[in-house]
Image (cartoon, rainbow over all chains, first blue to last red; front, side):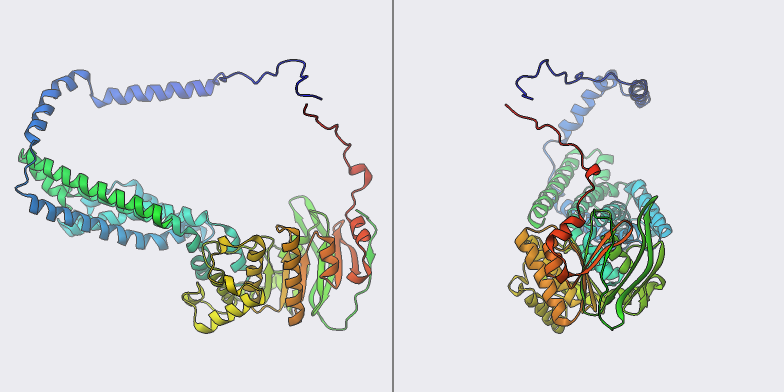
Amino acid sequence: MSLQSTPHKLHAGDRFARPSAAAFMGWFLALALLVWSFSGSELSAEKLVRGLPYMGNILSRMFPPDLARLDSILASLATTFQMAVSGCVLGLILSFPLAVLAAEGLSPHPVIRALTRGLIALFRTVPDLIWALFFVIAVGLGPAAGVLALMIDTIGYAGRFFAEAMEETDKGPREALSTIGASRTGLIFSAVVPNAMPSFIATSLFCVEKATRASVVLGLVGAGGIGVELKVAFDLFDYDTALTIILAIFALVVAVEQIGGHLRRRII
Amino acid sequence: MTAHLQTEQTTGAQAPVVAISGLAKSFGTRRIIERLDLAIPQGESLALIGANGTGKSTLLRMIVRLAEADAGTISVLGDEVGSLRGAALKRFRARVGVVFQKHNLVSRLSALSNVVHGVQSRRSGPRTWAQALAPAEIRDEAMECLAAVGLADKAMQRADSLSGGQSQRVAIARMLMQRPQIVLADEPDASLDPRAGREVMELLFRLTRDKGLTLVFVSHHMAHARRFSDRIVGLGNGGIALDRRALHCNEAELAAFFEEPAEDVPAAQPALVFA
């Protein structure tokens, strides 16, 4: 048979498939959800138009940024970064054993695995601001509450990704070591951790970036750091100082993200 | 496949290292092994051959208890494999070296670290996790194992930078580090080019022969089965369909063992010609 001598044109099928009744219903429900959400948000063009002069007013009062309190702002920024690093590192350290208990094939028992996964999911689904409120009540105002909140938030995130990274590693080396009678700890540290290391590093660097961003807002609920300064500046209508704080936060977050991205590319 | 059973009594007065009796294994409703009896004496090199799905790899996995038998008993090095649990099973597995079709090395670690892992058959703890943590005597022994497979100069090279043949040789070095009493190899030559496959088989045969170890290997290479074994056992029809001394087998006979019955061969399709 020759391809050139094909007797009639081949039909590739319709470009777009007709949606099924279920798909049509799905789209309709999605649209209804969108309309319902906007109706509850009380957002309107009229409000936006009315708010524009106020926005302009705030922005005009922000310029030029006031550098008079730069020293104390930088000190608070340093505290924020300290909170981010210590909370994140504590979280990463605790994430590892929890991830092992939560990983399929490494967890000693399905019940332990389910419980650990549930705990990690709880840590992840409750927002960091709620954890900060909880720890402000538990250990008082200040950076310690922020560190604990960031630690829990990091466990929720890194615990899940560490577990997934370990589950996704090549099972061959694990089986090879299991066959020679290696212990579970031996399997984990010899065959799983080395292969999951690039993923661990990427997740850890992302956690530092995430914790830096999160640490800024934790101060708003009294958990220490530059968030407190920002809240005070807004409360006192000290908008030019607020802008200095916002720019300092921006510089810190961008610096951490850039360094994190560079390290990820270098190490992995 | 030639359906008639070809058997030949094996010689040797020693107690068998592996004794299998009345073994049966199914996957779902599909019966792979119906009844299998096999005795392998100390120091013998035995090639397991057979078409896909006849249970060769499953048999090896059952010997080391990576798969459970439905019926029958497997005795290896004096241990009843089916009755072993927990620490006893680990101790048993430590005595059985296994070389897989895929080398199963930890790709991001050095060849030396991968060989050091073999010591986990008899030791545990952080000093067995990588070459950098290992005590001098373990490192030295791992280097000797690498030298035995001709790769001492690649010790610090990452496993994922080695060729397929070199990786399989590192896997053999890891198996030597284990100090096994019997070696099982599941198609160690399958994923390699003909030359690397032959080298790996030569190495495996020479090392086990030098140490007087029993070797049981699966291979689809009839030349390898003949050259590197004392005895060839062919699986088929749910059991042993051929059991001969390798010296007495010729290639034509082995090739005939794999021949499909004529009615199973699909009719040839006309070739598609691209003008």
